[in-house]
Image (cartoon, rainbow, N blue to C red; front, top):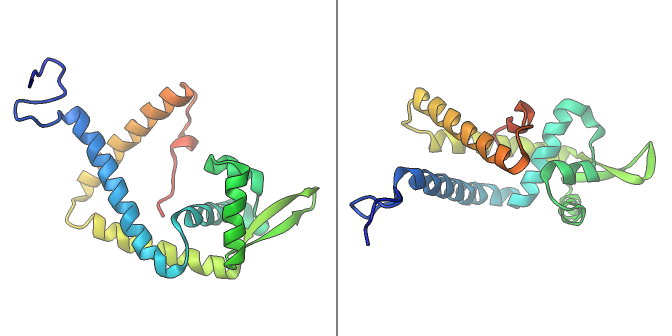
Length: 177
């Protein structure tokens, strides 16, 4: 049953390039996460925790050291308040962040990165740069730019399908870490 009328399977029995790119994106992402986790383990930070810490580090660059409200962090990361609360608990126990009272709302807490957290962020960025150099080794810059353009367009298409046509450039921007 190797009928190619659907364009899914070619004569050799392989998935068409329409599907293969999805497999490659998934596999590269999975393998990169596995390698990144391996490299981050000595820092004592889990993938979920470095995700939160990285977002707080980015916000520090734009907002200064005032931190983020816990609810803002949950919204930006697209996770529930309970989930982000647990992650912050563990980061706080590790000395990476601390909760501060919000001056405008006594019930709200701002989450700020500690000096130990900033040192870990610097190490995370260094590991990330080394990892990217390893992953992109022997790939011409032009090929990397083309891949970035293709992936950005794929991301736009997916986000527009999920959220409608009101997806802006801010939604697509990301920092590598």
